[in-house]
Amino acid sequence: MSILTRKYPFSEDIHWLRDSAISSTIVFLILYLLQPFGFAMYPGNKLLAALIFGLITFCCTAVYTGVVLRFLYRHIKPWRIWHEGVAILGMIVFIAICNFLFASYQANINEFLLFLYWALIIGAIITVFSVFLEYNRHLRNQMETLLSNTAEEQKNVVITISDSNVRGNDLTLPLNNLLYIEAQKNNVMVSYLCEGKVTSKEVHSTLTAVLDELKDYENVFQCHRSFVVNLNNITSARGNSNGYQLILKGSQYIIPVSRSFVPKLKSFIA
Image (cartoon, rainbow, N blue to C red; front, side):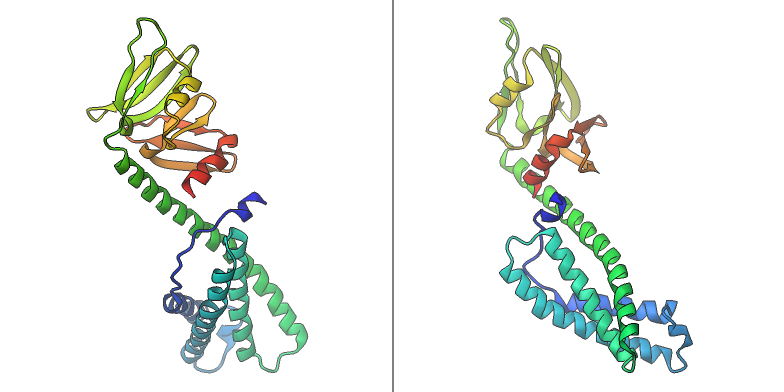
């Protein structure tokens, strides 16, 4: 259930006109072009009927978005994934009921309950896809903005990774050039950008010591027991709650994110 209780990022601005226009257009096109639910048997003007259903959908979406969603957004904070799911499902059912009542004003209670049953099933499927596609889109946009801002703030920051050997050479580099650090027995392998090319250097140290040196930088993130990454240089991330795989700028090397580190990664982004 943890995924349902995550914060759902949404815009404070409610675009009721845009959302209403999109919903009504979809309903009109589905009815007129595909003619489902026995609409093909309708003996009258199908274009006019589809337009009327589209208009009803427009009005329902406008009312629901402008009144119900506006009220919920203002009074329920933080807004979570399950809130968004219930709200969208409620809107779908509301639209379906209004269209049903218009089309079947003489229908009995059994027909209404059967229609409501299918509206809930279809609405639930649409809701799941809608919520999670929008959620992932928000996360990608938020991640790109966050990392871009962090990289800009740290463009003049220089870090030093100390070599614990007596005659060892410390590694000094711009923080934004750091890609990842991998533990290798008694050493760590530091991968970074040098003149636009990926370069690696072995330093006699441990991940624990490196993390302690770089503890002031939240974007230097331990994603695995053997890996530390610079989140500023992530170019793609794919996976699920069981684990992620990261690809960094200029490198095709895939960095694993252990399942135990996924919540922390998502909390950093969200």
